[in-house]
Length: 210
Image (tube, rainbow, N blue to C red):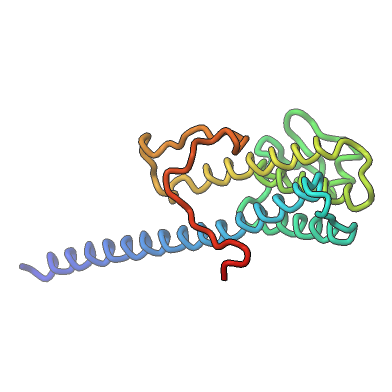
């Protein structure tokens, strides 16, 4: 084999090695992002579940003070900003700038808009973060004394939590474990008294038996 062919082969090998390194590096970065996003998602689910309970506790002994509820709103607000690290704002693609004025369609010359965004396009918040922000707003209203329908407010937070989980699952679809149709669960009745008798016996200690 001539020196020229050896050099060509070495060049091809070098390119393949570089591509392989890039591929594995990208895969590692993607997995790390999924790990961090999962941790963030866990925090969001926890705080929204607690805000949901604070809206309309089922037990009369469950009470949240205004300061405790405000801390929940603080956590939810922080989680919105943490979420921006994974889901940055979507910028308008059809708008440009000429002599300091926005151009595009539809035109945006509103003074109110310029006052809000500081004269620049900060973009639109990604939908998944809207549901976390809803939890934050609910907690803020509860902290100052919400006089409306608190049961309906709890339903809003419950629905937002479910929508958040659905969107997060779509975002992480490639890394989630695939399930077959045979793995599908059954409909669970909300009233436990209507459930079938357990097939496996459960033995619990009785008071005074120890």
